[in-house]
Image 1 (cartoon, rainbow, N blue to C red):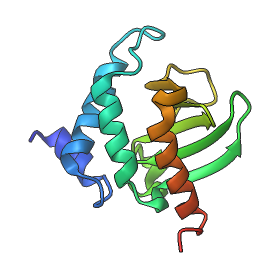
Image 2: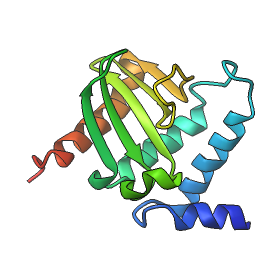
Image 3: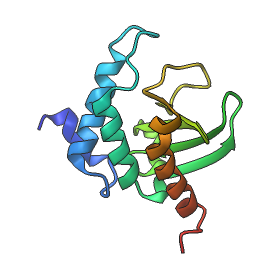
Image 4: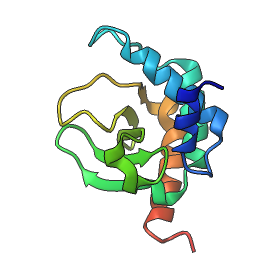
Length: 143
């Protein structure tokens, strides 16, 4: 494993599979190489990895912020301890409602930014179900 990937893995929460974290980070680095507005969305392998990541992420790595100004509700999930968010730890903003989910970088600064994932209806169901479980746990109702 090269030095850059070792640093990524070392900064990731221990609950998260290191190999999975490296794949997600690698995908994001490749995705950023595309010209703005031309980035791919809904890559099957990335969706599969992101789904695994979401399942593994502990409730402490989430922040649910409620209504957003552009569509539905917002959640943010970090690939490590959220107290390190200002140190460049990878984070995802998730815009969602009952019938869609969109996944962006958490570092978009309030500007429109292309999505890594944009799913609707039945295609969004698995990720929405996971997000619902995490919201319930995050709010303390999983007792």
